[in-house]
Length: 247
Image 1 (cartoon, rainbow, N blue to C red):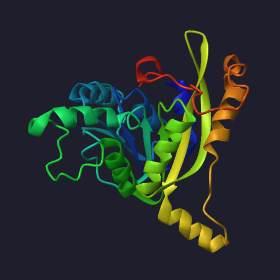
Image 2: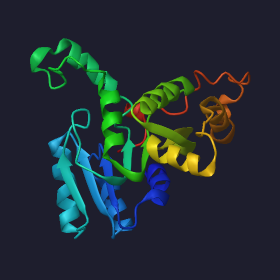
Image 3: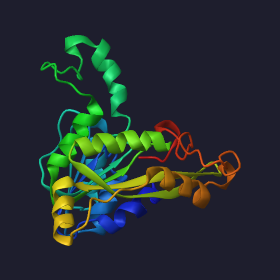
């Protein structure tokens, strides 16, 4: 939890609006609100029990700049525009719900009656792009353990109108075993293109494979020997949600 909080802190808006997707019981969301009292913070989660758990302590502590709402981000999210949108373990695995959509029938909560369903994750990324305000940032701290996983996520985000502008990693321990979580910073494609035109430069390209290899060098010494060849396609740098950082 502390690892992801530290990554979000530099991006917190001073007076703008922030959306925390899949906020869970709201520990981090309320902390963001206290760290940036001039901002308007919204936390959303599809589990109403989590929203109740988040709202009660925020009210008790007198945190007035945070609001919690129940929302399934694969179907819709609070209206923007937002200066910052953060997802921590809430978007990357959204496609697992497509199994429910496939076998759940018309009564499934994931069923798309239009027949144009292109997957929960793609839908979510498209809505994130649409909810960002001008010069807004989407910060994805997601369980994408291999470079190939991140490449697919970036490709989908690009198709949704987002550009990867930075990829770093934050270290943490699980029962004494070192791990690292990818921290991907996305911006609206329109904003990046406008800046590049003004500066006479091309769109930025982040070398995902190199970033994952560097994560092994910097944070995961126990993996260096096994992947000395530089093949980072299957380098595990973060466990899936069941064994990773708490929400």
